[in-house]
Amino acid sequence: MEIRIELARLAYAENILRCTNEPPEMVEDLLSLDGELEKARRWFVFAEAKRRFDPNVVRGLLVYLFSHYASSEFDPHKREQLVREITEGRVRMRDLTIERLAGTRLSWEHVFRLVGRQFNPTREKEKIKELYNQLYASASLIPRTEVSYGH
Amino acid sequence: MDTKYSPHPPYEDELDTEKLAEFAELFAGLRGLEYPDHPSEEVLRAYVANRLLDSPGAGRVGATFRDEQAFQKFLSGRVPRWTRSDVAMHVLTCARCQERVAYLQARRWSLLSSARQHPREEQSWWRRFAWGAVGAAAAAAILAALWLWSASPPSPTCWIEQPCWTQVVQDSPMKGSIMVVYRVSPGRF
Figure (spheres, chains in turn brown, blue):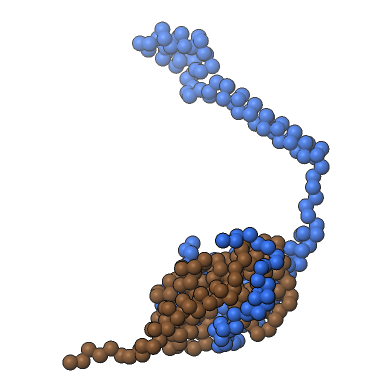
């Protein structure tokens, strides 16, 4: 069960990339069924960042993440195909899936080409982390206790 | 805001070192799974060709999280109708389907490559001229046929045998008018 919820969280992350995601508040319960609310929130912050900052830049960060960490194995053939499609402008971010990006190890240059403009990844990453702290850091300090209506 | 792409970004050194490693642990739990169902060849081919939808309808929101029932089906690995996200997640965690997708992808890639190597032969000017002339002639023939058809007198609305016709004319209070019309356009009767 836990692994399937883990997969569901990744499916949600993919939806963020393709802009087909539900708002975080709508799926919070479903994606934390295994009790891993923190893990769900780490994806929710990308959805929230897309609302607040440049959505394409946030999607670009996701492209890089999926391409580097969704698979531990590097697939040079898959990379060659995808890079060629990106270079020729035959693929857009909304066409991509985690599976398609996994193992391709795209460079930032390829990500910029997909996004359509350059950005500073370190600065954008810091903005995401800052937003996470702003949204959830205080929430995680409050223990989730049962509410009692006892007399 | 810089919106132009340049192959040499101004912060190249930073790009070399920025790997977003802090987020790597979000993928830590990912591993292979056993599935009761697998997408068909047709579904995989549609996925590879980027023709699968995000949800069965035309909605912009993915189907996986639409309601609890859809979510339960996703968790059980028994999806009633494969969406793009369902297939992507399945292939990501199913070794067998990874091989199938890699094969289909390679086949598609070789087809596209061969299509690029042998582009459609450019038609010469005289062939295009000949096709144009044939098209114009056909259009002219159709227009002429239409014009002739509309100009021809309409088919008689009724047929009255000669003896009866004489009787009709004689009995009619509008006898004079009928005869005038008959003389002007006899084909109509």
